Length: 309
Length: 165
Image (cartoon, rainbow over all chains, first blue to last red; front, top):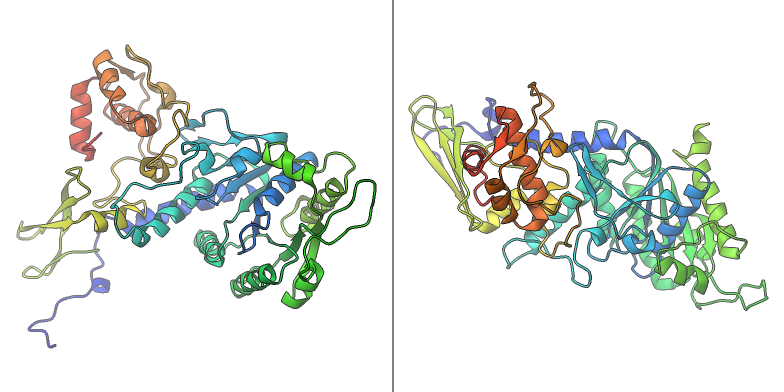
């Protein structure tokens, strides 16, 4: 098609445009960068696979780090399946709305947290207002904005670790990487990403996809955590297999990641975490020792308090 | 998004906006050279796409509030999720929730709510009430208005494009 006359294109119009959409988005990124400037290290807990215990690992690691004297915040990025509100004992008190942001709820061991658990009615799914049809068109953007607000609009204060519990789906990992990489010229990355798997071929395959995405995204530090690595009989120390699939160590080798921790299945840990009282590093159980070691590893990892000394 | 007045070869400026409350937006743009106006009309889906980004067509008139997008879009909000979700009757001081745009310099004053304004605020859905209260209080601070009345609320709605609040 030939044009009857020449009309200037978008890039040619350099004057002031009052909608300032780009500037508004830039202000959002600036707010996010400002908030993250008070965070010592961003620790991402992800998998890609659902049902592997990411949130339980997040809650117990957060409490274990706090028990070592670290100041810890936790973001439940699983907007549609929130569980950190309950697991970290965040529920119960209204959030305080201050001019400088929302004061996060404070749970077990002083861990600060934010979750849709705190914002939506109990027993109902997360639903967004908007046109009832073709929600897929805008829902992803809405949820990305909500996640950004969870980080940028919450008064975390100076903290050592901000732990992000990423929901299932490799796309969710990518979405978070996009979010933090846009905050400044330094292309911010999570300091540490812990991928959680169970001894299962299927879980291992999904984790491999997630690892590929993270490596392609340039994430420098990725560790593998093998959850539900086995169980012990009462009074016995031997770890018996819970699944027949490849061990976390075998998955780590196959994917090319370093195995950071293997967490045995422990019904006490499970029930206490479910009722908002994570074991963390408390006591002398095997899992308490495992989380103590994992917390120490995080502390010595990139961005960790020990690494900074 | 930009609009060009082709006869004048001028970028049109945003001049007004209307939010009828049905999910649509009417945004008016004017050519500074010939005064010609044009209206940009969006349907609910288009409106949703833009507002999902957390931006305002025509520019932001008041500072964005904490968790504004999340709070205003939840369809099943928890009662009393926020400490200021409850509004006490008979008026109340607004200074505790006052904020100011960082680039606006003005003398902070004590802002109170008349009983009639408090009653009207009570009609705002609970999940956005705290946010709405702050927007009106910010407006009053900006305009150095000591008592928020229904008339002040009407003016704020008109000037800030807050139809529906």
